[in-house]
Length: 113
Length: 110
View 1: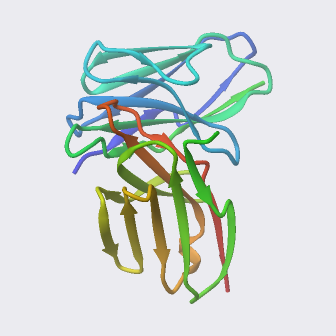
View 2 (view 1 turned 90 degrees about the vertical axis):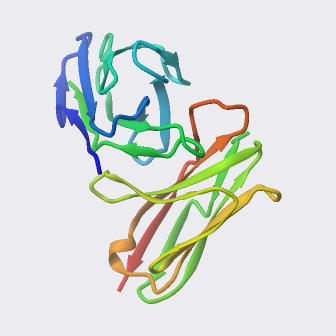
């Protein structure tokens, strides 16, 4: 088995601040994802990375940057936090098998004051 | 419109009863994954399906690719089944990103 860890668990920022979220997986999975989930809503894909050093935009990439530093880690940066923003950011990974079965981390909860 | 439509959007069940959740796909789908997001926010994998049926305890899921839908049956609902159920469809064409439905919010009450 493996595990996905996300740090920090809770993140409080100020309006306009640049904030970085980190994700690590020890599944040895090739593909990693960042999703945003607003309260009571579904998941929206921000960025994903098919393999190390690859980066692909999702449906919600504006306002974010991402970096796949190595196979096991994928970082997401909020380039300028928006006032009163609250959301959970979920990281996932998958390996190419029959398809792309995803495994999720516990999430980072962002609050912007 | 939504490529993955989940129904119902919300459901209330009495403990011990049965129900079914459904996902309809308007895109050609090769695999389906079902998740349960518990009230704490953690997403747990329930099923990963190619066309066919899988069963795990009180849960059973079917994916019918020809008719473009998947169902998740819950038997003998328990309080701990409460949460939001999501399906995610992987489309043909070899892309790497599943498309999520908007979820079914389930409350099981005594």
